[in-house]
Amino acid sequence: MTPHDYANENFQRFCDELVDLLRLPSVSTDPERKHAVLDTADWLAAHMHQIGLENIAIMPTAGYPVVYADWLHAGISAPTLLIYGHYDVQPAVLEDGWQHDPFTPEIRENRLYARGSADDKGQVMVHLKAIESLLANGGCPVNVKYIIEGEEEIGSPNLAAFVTQHKDLLKADICVISDTGIHSLEQPLIYYSLRGLLSFELIVSGPTRDLHSGYGGMLHNPNQAIAEIVAQLHHPDGSVAVPGFYDDVLLLSDAERAELAKANMPDSEWQKMMGDLPEWGEAGYIRIEKYGARPTLEINGINGGYTGEGFKTVIPAKAIAKISCRLVANQKPEKIWEHIQNFITQITPPTVRCEVRYLGGGEPAYTPIDHPAVQAAVRAYGSQWDNPVLFARGGGSIPIVADFQSLLHVPVVLMGFSLPDAGAHGPNESFHLTMYRKGIHTIITYLHEVKNAAN
Image (cartoon, rainbow, N blue to C red; front, top):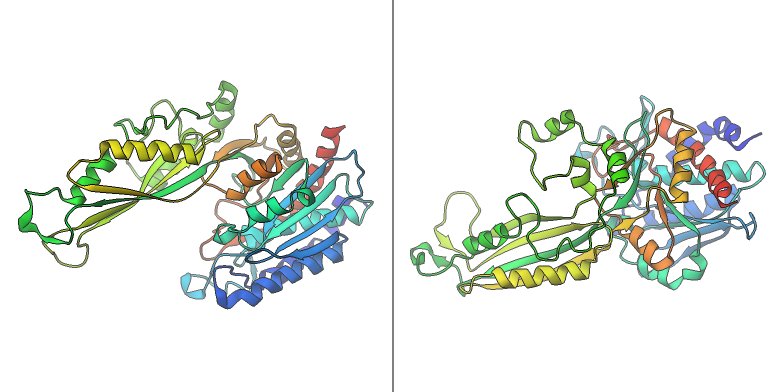
């Protein structure tokens, strides 16, 4: 029997096992769910043992543990893959709009509905079922290591330290992560880049306390001053005005732009999101390039003075803006932060006081399209889909991707199997069972393609 035949014959059991995993409410942000999170780690360790993985360990961190397992019998000449996923999930209650209890999985119209079904338990099981199918039929063509964490949904606060501590254990040639999605049921897509993040607060203060608006005209209102500062952070064409902001940006090649154009957002999708509003932003870039290939500076929130019901004639003592930057390949958060601080200092009026507070950041991640590990993924998707793979740069961030690249010096390949309408983080999250089945077959093929590419 081939691994693919085994996967098909056992697919109903694979679905039943995923249902069992989804019943565990492993909400890492909720202290009342602590035992459920730990039970999920135990479930995964037991399942890894059952399917033939070895050296299984529930390894402590300063928070929830990491579940580790490996199978290293492909030989020293075979590549080693590090496979990452997470077993924690977002909070979910029936009152959020679920059609059923979010931790009582239901199958409707070939979709499995439950919290964590797409993000990320379903995709974790794709990899476990692929390796089971291989181990049950002669073994795996490559060496594999699994690292499944329990804190991704709270920002992976302890994973970088864990990776640093266990570099030798986690040493690999390629890292594979399935925590993203594809374009549609018929159209595979690979995200080969993710943006980094920088977030900070801008605090503008004036009088020592809130004042009656009758004092207006003799002092600089912090609300007005923060608006003046924020307005200077962009040029009229939408580009960021901070000097040095674009210095290190990895520019798109003509070939890369041609690939990205194949997955550009169509007008119909734009209109669903924005109605009849015209497009905004840097000239010379199409939507998909603006989405993932260009850095941004966004005003996420502004607050100052009275904003409740009715009216209050007051000049506030201070105003606050929450601001974030999405960074692209080659940009360093610490360098961008220095540029931003210098610029805000220069443009702050002398009539107010200004403070900027760093809130956090993470580096971007990038693996070139022509990297052999990415091209192996292209061939693996091609074994299950008729349409050729599209490529995109992700607009968001998965911080651990950049950590793996910088700490382990390993290329990261993002092989997602979630659909755009999966509803991750929202009510009625689902994982399409066609994607579950195709994902298993794709990963089986990918492991063979990686071995072939190494020969």
